[in-house]
Amino acid sequence: MSPAMSTVSLTDEQRRYLDHLRVQRRLAERTLTLYTEALQRLTGFASAQGLDLLRLSAHQARRGLAKLHAEKLKPRTLALILSAWRGWYRWLGQQGLVDANPIADLHAPKQGRPLPKALGVDDAVRLAEHHQDATDPVAEALERCLVELLYGSGLRVSELVGLDLRHHASSAGWIVPDAAEAQVLGKGAKRRAVPLGGPSLAALQQWLAVRGQWAAADEPALLVGPRGRRLSADQVRKRLKQRALAAGMPTHVHPHMLRHSFASHLLQSSGDLRAVQELLGHANISTTQVYTRLDFQHLAKVYDAAHPRARKK
Image 1 (cartoon, one colour):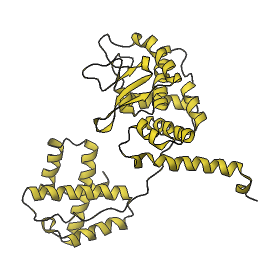
Image 2 (tube, one colour):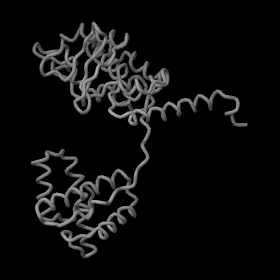
Image 3 (spheres, rainbow, N blue to C red):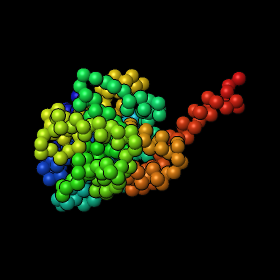
Image 4 (cartoon, rainbow, N blue to C red):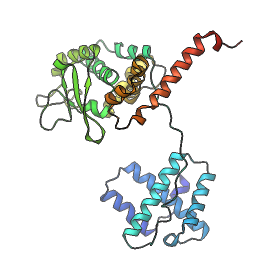
């Protein structure tokens, strides 16, 4: 929290609302911190203007938004602040403390959708095939397997760590080596099958051959850490970051970058947007279409480098 924000006192109603979010809604601490700062901004604005927050009009709220614009805040930040304000006034209405929500019709400006960052094909292959630690074959097999599954099948990190060795009643996902596929549980509790390519199957078999050296006897998870239990998403991020640094990657590599790389490289090769949508588990094809922009970027670079008419005189 910024020093300026920490000097603004919350109202009793705002504290009660934040307690409601913490206890009833179980929001994460980071989200609660951001909502606290947003409500402090609102209180600071109202105090400076001599306004009563419980009688704030839509016109006055619009002036508050204009002040935020003047601070040159990013659209995403503005959207979060307005969401906190809107939620508070909605809660006040439920408590019978206000008659209308003055934030109801206020919206942050739309922001341009950033292109996902993807590795080049050569870099992705180099990361997968890099031998980081020959002195620890179990760790090496684990990291090779997780990279191949993230890049070879386009899994989310949550889907990766949720994989079990085999299907049982509480499985979020599981592998089916004989069918060269994995069953995963994606967003919205939607299940899908993803194929396992040759390199993924090879890495999987290499890991399964040594998994027993780490795994606890009763652990159903496919990927486990040295303590024998299911690997966490943070552990995957840490291991991937270390492997990428050791492999000399030109940029910070995180699990979702390998998912982006999977989608981008598959689209470059096949041009089949609908198939990429199915493999990624996107509910809406518009989410997948961002990769057509990434693919166009790649094609533009090829054109600039190779076509005679693209070369500058």
